[in-house]
Length: 265
Length: 161
Image (spheres, each protein chain N blue to C red):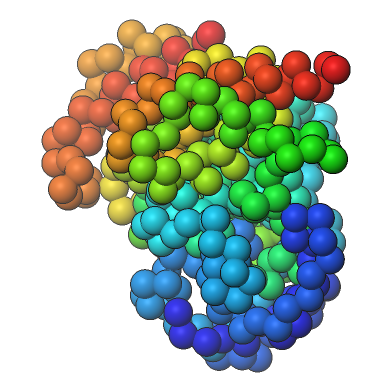
């Protein structure tokens, strides 16, 4: 790892100022992606701005029709939260499947969403539930936030402070994980609301995406059989050493059926 | 930068570069070599320590994160106060042959203790899910799983005493 300066601001505006004023500075939340990246010298920022001393970024609040999860809330806390388990059990289940226990102790929802790894779990939950990303300057709908391969609509000095999730009627997540990394080879999140169903897929392509034909079919009949015959186009799907695009396409339908099953159970 | 934390119950102050990893700090600066570095890529879990009671991989933790925190390493794991007894989880690993070469054992123990503390009524499936971040190249995991189940039961029994 190359040396870097380390800043631990205790106010969000101070953190934003540091980010804006130091060229090539990076935010660090739990560090579960950033630290390995620094160790491999895939990134060598001159300064890190640590978010851990900022107040009010941790914790989960019940707002009735929505729940809000602070950006620095670790995956283990979301997985074990009685509130999330009661209101959006599919989201608690998703958090419990990320990485391993040590990763879940440190890794945060804000870090995962800001990083937008194409095989990360949280982007599927955030897009599938149609959540709102709350930042230091504005609120961004999930549909406008994710822009493919590690790209988001965040500005340089913008900091995610929380994610606000609407409480669905039902929701479920299923993933086929890469056995070594435990990232999603394919992960599918489904959420049923009064006005329709959302289906979001991670791992299969260069970024999380929705599947309108499945959403339409599940809105008519929220049952795995409704989507069993829906095939996903392999165009734009990833082929790598773990799986070819046609296998990933096949897995999207299989995982979507399992996610509906999980939502119904 | 100077950081101040509690290490295995003792107040500790050290000077570190921000880019220092906790695993390096422990092994090279503080001479606590029980924490092992296996893969150095946060896959294998040989370096697991407890930060404020939670299992974390010390090869993927920057030293500044320790400031003000409570750190427990394998050297701090022990039995009832005032005795030289091993921790019930360590006893269980010995009793049930939960190790062969022993390289992964410190991390296995730290993960297992955190797992048992978090969920008292562990099932075998819980143990296998909970050990996903710890790799053993010798045992095939069977005896490790048996050891963790026995160690968790012993920890529960000790709590009830």
